[in-house]
Image 1: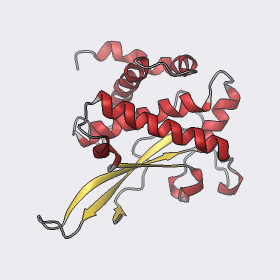
Image 2: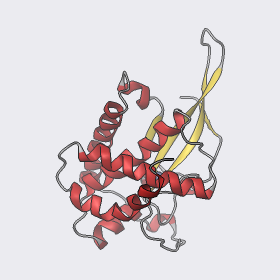
Image 3: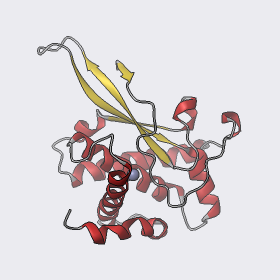
Image 4: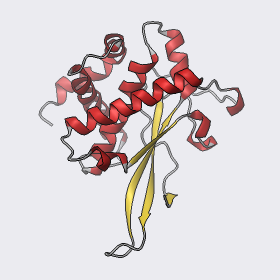
Length: 205
Ligand SMILES: [Zn+2]
């Protein structure tokens, strides 16, 4: 795919239940998912895509698939690595070439999973298991992406808007994942509980 980076800043650094001070850790020392963990991550990503596509009643899951990609630490560039958040979304501009309508552009989103932060959370909170945790993270990021592509939410929002959007996206994520039985989901819901609370104040927004 021909795509060029249009924004490199972490416009959405979400999934941050605690404010951990960012630490500067040399990239090579960061722990990455091992092979069995990568298998679990791939299953979580496939399931997340299916659940979000179904929930938004997209005619074809391909519609969503063409608009995002999930990368783990092994394939992140240094400036795509952050410390604290479990994932960040980076928007790229894809270019269509030689179509009947001429060239055009479209948004493409790269979900950058931060292996080191995810694994640190699993170690700190033993109730959390990798597959349901990554499932939650990826569903959450896909909900953001659907809302960006449907122009419900601007990618470049103010800090206040971003916080309000976080609560809405956590609520939607909880809603989607509550409708299926995924082993290990309850501790993940508990982990993110505090993020959903502000939604009570914004039901009418
Ligand atoms: Zn978020």
